[in-house]
Amino acid sequence: MFKKNLLPVLISTLLISCSLSDRNSGSDPDIDKLAADYVRLGLTIGLYDSDFVDAYYGPDSLKPLTSKSVTFPKQQLLQKAAVLKDQLSALAAKSPDDTLGQRASWLVSQLTAFERRIRVFSNEQVPFDMESKDLFDATAPVYTEQHFRDLISRLESLLPGRGTLPDRYQQMASRFLIPKSKIDTVFQAAIAEARKRTLAHYQLPANETFRLEYVTDKPWSGYNWYKGNYNSLIQINVSQPIFIERAIDLACHEGYPGHHVYNAMLEKVLFRDRGWVEVSLYPLFSPQSLIAEGSANYGISVAFPGNEQEQFCKDILLPLAGLDTTGTAAYFKVLSIKSGLGYARNEVARGLLSNKMTEKEALRWLTDYCLLTGKGASDYLRFIKKYRSYVINYNYGQDLVKQYIELQGGTADAPEHRWKLFEALISKQSRASELLKKH
Ligand SMILES: [Zn+2]
Image 1: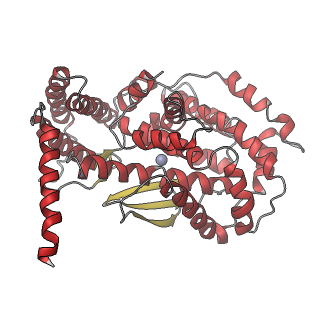
Image 2 (image 1 turned 60 degrees about the vertical axis):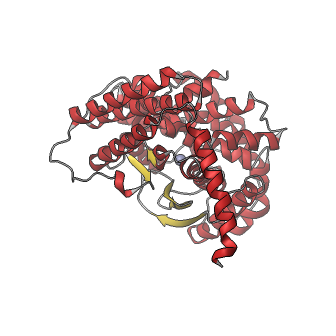
């Protein structure tokens, strides 16, 4: 047994030493030490800010040795971030175009987010766009109320019946509401299909897996908690009504080829194969999140291009949910126009955070322009209060990822190429300003 395995071990040792020398050729070994300091700092912030560390699967040795102090050590943390940024900026300046320089420069932008989040956590406020630029490396475009009115008016003729337009939308959508007793059956089928479609294009680690859990009373509809070793816990919030199309959205977004695959790719390609320890920490309020949310949302149309979402709902999910398939085409037509309304959420967050919009106005925008139910709108207000400018990562992030991939030829009529470009994007350290450079 032992002898039989000796040759592969020898070969892999040689391969590892080759790849290590390749990796370090002309590079500065300091980067690994700075990356470890970055992780230590992130985990220390997480001692105080419980939303900061979304995932960590790196070595225990980088976890803080002391418990948190009574007061938030704002200045001390800011100073640590500034010193690290200076050291990494110097490394990035030495070799801006090679792997080392790009890795250092990515860490610098992550640390800019650390600094901003430390200030936000200390109730230090800046304008919405400045916050999102520092946290997510992006500034979302501004849209007026008239823009959303115009979009909504396109729905008038598609939503017959009596009452206001949001009411007529809810009447139509209610026919596609998954009964509580069928939620698990429908989700299992949607995730199995999203996984099958992803595995047809990507070679994921053999032990990749996820656990599905149903939870209540959360400000979000679904969440992926990445546990490391290619494992995810996917939670679905069943306190909110779940319409049929959301089963595919969430299966792709939280699972395949969204967050679960994104995290597994980063873990495999960068953390395990290259030893980049910074990847084992996923700080929620950082440029990484725009790529994560943007790719997870765009991934829905990668896995289900054209009208395949509608088709799969009609053929498989609606019958599984025990729902009538009549009117599915009209419903999906409405949904495709409604998808343009996502940016109204940014305006609500922008208005609320800058005190230019009252909560009452915010709720009106969310029901009138985002077509949320009363409960959906108040849940979304909770979301904004907790996650703030994070809201841009879903809509603007999706558009940036879409443009980045499609400008390189990854369009719906070149699906194989699109899967490849998507895989490349979710397997590297990237950020919004780099996606914009491709424009
Ligand atoms: Zn997400």
